[in-house]
Each structure stands twice: as C-alpha cells, then as structure tokens.
Picture 1 (cartoon, chains in turn blue, orange):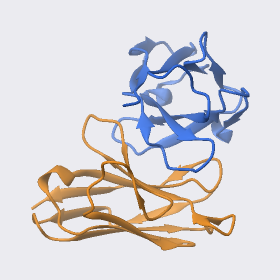
Picture 2 (cartoon, rainbow over the protein chains, first blue to last red; picture 1 turned 120 degrees about the horizontal axis):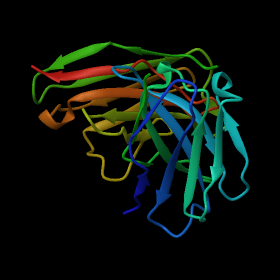
Picture 3 (cartoon, one colour; picture 1 turned 90 degrees about the vertical axis):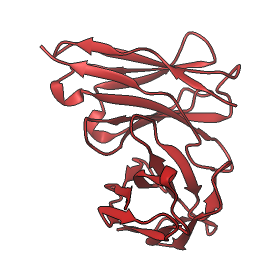
Length: 120
Length: 112
C-alpha cells in the first residue's frame, strides 16, 4: 500500500516562510505528479499546485504564484512545498496527493496532512 | 477557472436509503474525445479526503459498489444506493480537466 508521509505541524509568524515535505513509501515518485492542496479551518479544499518530480516542471494556482515553490527534495522520494510571506489566511491543513502521468485515475493517494498555523 | 456548483449543501439520509449528489460545471469536462475529467472524494472528520470515483464513473480501488458516478460534459451525479453509517462526511466533486483543479463546495451527508 503506497503511503505519502508529510512533515510535522508548523507554527509561523506573519511574514515568515514554511516548508512542508511529502515523502513516498516507494523508492521514487517517478511516473507520478504530486499535487499540493490545502484546507482552511471549516472550509473546503483548495488546489495549490503540482510538480512533475521527473522533470521538475511545476504549475501553480495564480493566486499563489510568486509565493509558492514546489521542488524535488533531497531524494527522489521527496517533494517539498514552500510558501512565503505568510499571513493568518494561510492557516490551514496542507496535503500532498499523487496522480499518475498516464491513465489518469484520480488522486488515489494522499498524505496525512500538515497543520500550519500563522499567528503573531 | 472552471467553477463547480454542488448540490445539495447537506443531506440527511436514513440507513439503507439512497442518496444523490449533483455537480455542475460551467465548462465541459470532456477531453480528448475520450473521458470526462470529474472525480468524487469523501472526507471524513479529521481525515484527508479519499477518492471514490474518477473519470466520472470509475470506482477507485476498494470503494464499495453502492457508490456510483454518472454524467458527462457539464453535469455529473454521485449516487449511494444504500447509505450506511460509515458514509457520513463531506463529499466533494473535483474537475481534473485543467489547472487549476477546482472543487465543488461540498455536500455534508449525515445519518437520520
């Protein structure tokens, strides 16, 4: 059973940056896309962006462009998401999720979520 | 961006009764003359969402056959043939036709 494991909860001050990691239980993310999504308290789901870990190509939601960076991590089994210039509106649970390159079959695997709190 | 309108906002169903959730898109989700890029997810309290249906009508691995998805182009439906207690939670539709992926507002299903 594939698992995506995310880094732990973070508390940040406004204006700071946060980096959240997503690691697969498999050897590599090859053949998959990794999406980042978030859910503010009591709200619905918001898609933030996606990376092709093989090529490094990324697409970001327009509202986060310039503040968000998704990168391949230190190993082929890790992807990082960094969000800068944090405000209290960025307080949310952040999720990574995986889709396949070919034969689209939905976001079948999700990380457990990482709580990020932005507060002064 | 593609806008998805989901209804109803909430639903209270007796065990064993059917339930139906609708999702309407402001753009066609049909792509490559082949598939409708609509997914359905269920999020139980305190958990990440999990995939129920992909490409409008394909059940994900391990999803009970009481869940079914239908529809094409701009109008889609998720049906639960006989609701069970474990089906409570918030159901979301999501379009995978283009980036940014977008979600419906969610439908909360409760047991009567």
